[in-house]
View 1 (cartoon, rainbow, N blue to C red):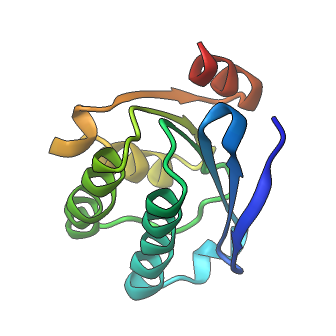
View 2: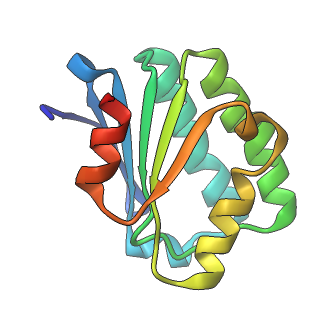
Length: 136
């Protein structure tokens, strides 16, 4: 993938692979320092990136994601992020999962919300396998 970095903070980096229509966000270990407002702000950056650079595929690398997503934030994410990204053309989402069980569970629960269920979403532990599925 030829990617271009389009956003970076201490919590995440967002890359665009325009030729394959993939938005790739990579969470950083500093995500453990986020509060709810930081989390919302970071996801709204992602929504803006997708709106400005329409893609059909999203690759979410959560291997270093350390923030625990509450049930309230899961519901917010479904409406404010997943629904909007879907409206902007996202059809497939591949997640690279973290090792920590609680964080993994919270990420999976966030994607089990109503809007997320309407996307073709798969979970992977291997980046290359996830990329292969997105491009299939």
